[in-house]
Image (tube, rainbow, N blue to C red; front, side, top):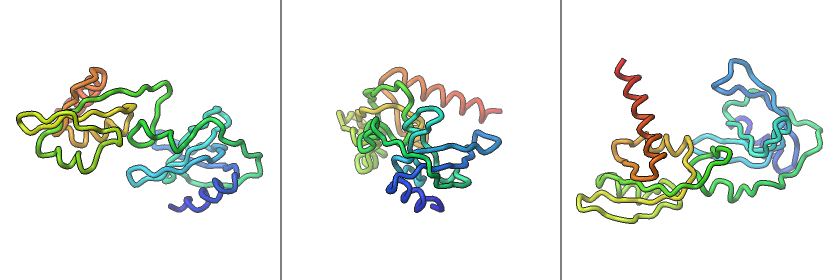
Length: 186
């Protein structure tokens, strides 16, 4: 939250930012010039989206808790003419959208004991209950772009979900489970 106010003012006043950033994947900090367009919270973390001029990516996103320093620059601000951020996140869980990713129709079977929770706290706004099975389990349909946050959500309750379709999503879950088993057996 240290940077929230400064970033919010930069968004409002259309000021270009020079941001020193250290990803968990990087050994050394990197400096980005960012034209800020949008702030989004997900899973108790804030993310800043904007244009990274160097890479010409208008959906560059940075987690605020990874920012080491920010300077407001006098560089001319480039307006966002590509992305409608009020619609940008509609098809995902979280904040990550991979390039060329497509919406998938996902069918999940949820165990009976967990189904009321999924009904009261949907995994995604597109969620629809499509069937209740004889054992009390329920089948739900989601129309989403599978991403890291979606798989993390599934894996956090993997003993309560079964991916019915599509096969590529089912295989991704199986792959993650196999990796987890391999890591924990050694």
